[in-house]
Amino acid sequence: MSVLERPPAPPAAPRRRGDRRFLRALPYLVPAAGLYVAFLVYPMLDAVRLSFFSWNGFRTSEPEFVGLRNYVRMLTNDPVFYTALSNSVIWVVLSLLVPMLLGLLLALALNRRMIGRNLFRSVFYIPAVFASITVAAMWRWIYNPTVGSLNQFLEAVGLASWQQQWLGDPKIALYSVFVASVWQGVGFSLVLFLAGLQQVPAELVDAARVDGANRWQVFKAVTIPALRPTTAVVIILTIINSLKVFDLIVGMTGGGPAQSTQVLALWSYQQSFSNHDFGQGGAIATVLLVLSLCLVVPYLVRTLKAEEH
Image 1: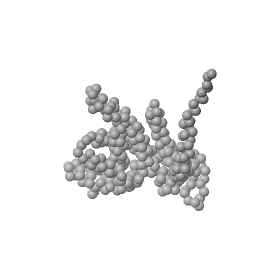
Image 2: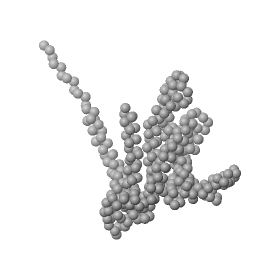
Image 3: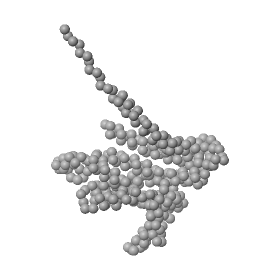
Image 4: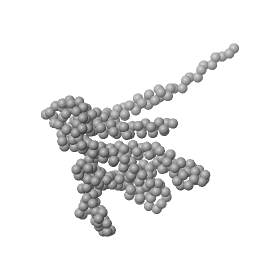
């Protein structure tokens, strides 16, 4: 007589365990989500809403719905908008090239055993902890055309003809401000790339060397692929920080001379709070939001898919 064995109980569904974990974490997530919605999502959506109204920002006047008129005026009757858009794009491109490359090179140099390595790491990172308005004050003093250290140094080494109105010449003012941005931001990229280099498998580097690979081949075949997640983070943060650059330009030039250092974030602020045209300021802010999403989201999605595969 055969005995029917009771089939083993199925294992608990992972989905149920995930649901229980989510419910336990929910009381901790709700306050953070509420703050996120109140202080980030709501102001962002409200700026988009205001872009369809005409409003001077005073409670005594009611916003008037004007549809797309602010966008039409921005695109057809606002030459400063195109200057700000061009400068923002230039700032993003330069930020992706200069500070990132310098940060990577410094990280490779300071990842080796050398005397004073920690000291050099601290020296390069310290500017990143300064407030941008402090950096702006420092570099305004350096760029001062009469008593600034840069022009005095050029005169002392016999290069007086190179002296410039660094922040007063519309042709070079934006790039002069960008140099200050590089000085402040390269330490941030340096720290991220240093953290990424710590994750490079040492056994792969040793195996490549045993196979006869030189330094460049090891860097190309082992280090760069291992740094891909770190590079993605650096690129995304660089784009975001570049598009929202504001306080450094306010502190050094205020957008001048002749709007030559104007950027989208500053122009949106000035339209809203200086010119009391919140509709136009909201339209510029909306363009900046769409531009940020168009640059960041595709690269982020592509990177996440690559990591999953």
